[in-house]
Amino acid sequence: MLNLRNQNDIQAAIMTSENDSEKRQPRFSVELCASRAEVFRMIPDVRRNLAISAFEKVIADVRLGSDCGTLGVSPDDVEDIDGIRSGGQFDTPVITPKGARLLLRMLEAGMIPQHAGTDYFRRAPDLAAYAAREEELARVTLERAARSPEQVKREAEEAAAAKKARIAHLAIYPEEAKSEEIKRWMIDQVFIARYGYGAGGVMEFGDVTCHKEIHHWVSTKGYRHTKIVIWWTDKNGRRWGDAPFSKPLNRKARGGENIHKYNRDLRSD
Image (cartoon, rainbow, N blue to C red; front, side, top):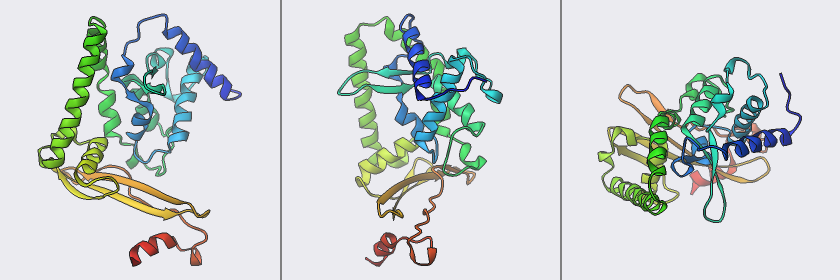
């Protein structure tokens, strides 16, 4: 097995693949793909920075001819899995549905670091739904290639406006949500549109009951933190979304108790 000596080896493997991809037509348009930040938010209770590093290391290992063990990833598996979307002040890294499929394999193999490490938290319905759009986005990419840039831009603006209008509608009539709209990001956006930023609570969304919890705590070093937990249960009583919140232990708390002064102050207000 080839051992990567440092981060420069990983970056070299990624840049080599990006240079090669410029010579051929990409399978997915980066404008259609979710950003890397959005994709990793689809994984419940993920330790994002460690997960991104693990994902990039698998890609680099395969591109440099290394063995990925039981994961069984081939060079074809790491083609067309990521890209860069230009525009605005910064470039945005994206992950294609094919890349999401690789993330699902890593998640099932226990290779994606999470705060809660049981099999229960290896379910990622939003990530699976995005990965399932692989053929759809590939087809749309081919169709867009035959249209003018002006037409493509206009359609993208219309799609963004429709999405915004749908969120505004569901903020007023959340019970009208369709089953395919019951996703963490959609629930969060509807909560924000309905109740405002920083507000949690319970909401009937389609045929499920959704919860948005906002937890505050103070770390050992005295820093204040906020954790947003969004979850819902299906008709069978199965829980989906984020993992249950567990307050980190503050070693400075009296007697080592797992209760923070900031949280006690909140309850006493």
